[in-house]
Image 1 (cartoon, rainbow, N blue to C red):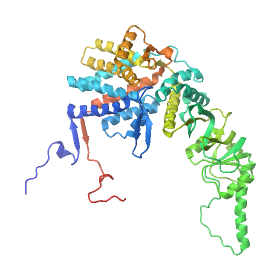
Image 2 (tube, one colour):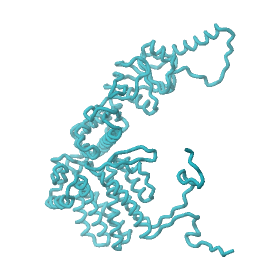
Image 3 (cartoon, rainbow, N blue to C red):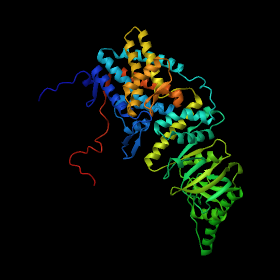
Image 4 (cartoon, rainbow, N blue to C red):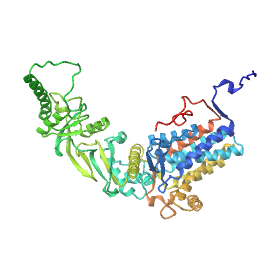
Length: 547
């Protein structure tokens, strides 16, 4: 029997099957590579001419979109360092709702610069110090680029809202923004509360119906429910509504009981009492003044019969979240079950409920014009499901932008004008520094060139020409000059009406830089052996598939 050598060093400390990478080459450069791969995927989707990605997730669902938040969500990124970029993108999506692509692409560019500096011999700590200084300076410069007078804004002024919403919507649906922006602005303004900072994104709903085209899209003050009403009453106006969460049916009792019946007469009476009880409940609802019963669960045959007799409209809403929104729209209080007495205070009110046929599918439209700021629905029409999904993402971006501008309405020039100015000013700032971190600040400044370069490349323009002419214009003092993608030249963005929200830019660049500094701070990766037996795909030898 041979001598068994005891493992030493880190092998002896950790369990068998672990992986361990350390040092600049193994850990830092590998991490940077993984992050660069991710940003390469998202970069081509940046801007209005961004390309679509076709992603099929683990459930075989197909996504055709240029929305980075959706792409990175569905990619199921495994690498721990690349996951940090995904998390930064998600944080941006949750905070602002737009600009996730800028976060991931810019972070990838910063890491590319960091890799070049590491190859030159700089220590990651010097790079982090330089990047941190650059962020502080960046905030100062960015605040200086804010358009004068944009901090004071009436959030109910449709023109001003559309001005700020155009860029995010155009980046998802280029060419369609002139149709979509007024729709989204209308919907948001209708549900905007007295204090705009309390604006709730959930109050603007989206209903997607196949068929028709973008010009058929409308907004509805109220809700659009897919599906028909349960009974034969299909239209009702200026009616009171009673909402029952537990369903309209004869309820089984909590305790079990046995009924002993001696004769056929008793059996008949037993059936009649059940009937009488159900009628009593429906009559109570009708007597309270309600003309519509909304049920959160099944509606029994017998209950439906009496609803028809009392000419009540019956709606069934399966989702409890949708039921809550319905209560918010109508101002009703959801009751657990129908009682023999219905309190008039618990009733809601609707202007009209009607069943309409839109594009071959029947929908129930609940309108509430006088209800103040309750719920508004944007009705989207398009020819395929994937187009509808993409339109919905554009609407989401627009609504999230409205929420952001309710809190901070400052705007900076769009179309890469801000980025070139930041690059120019940071480059000047790097010359004033004396330490090694000046190289990192210069790289940070260079990284901003990625945005005009990508915008130009995605639009099929010559990137080098565009960037050099942008620098020339900005050096001459025209700080609002950006790229006109249609004309293929550089123009003043105030004439093109392309503005970006200050908060979107600020958070995106900050999250990207923070994620990059976190990745650069890692010098060792230690991975334990994954838990669990063989996965479904790697079955032990000799095992047959079921089929």
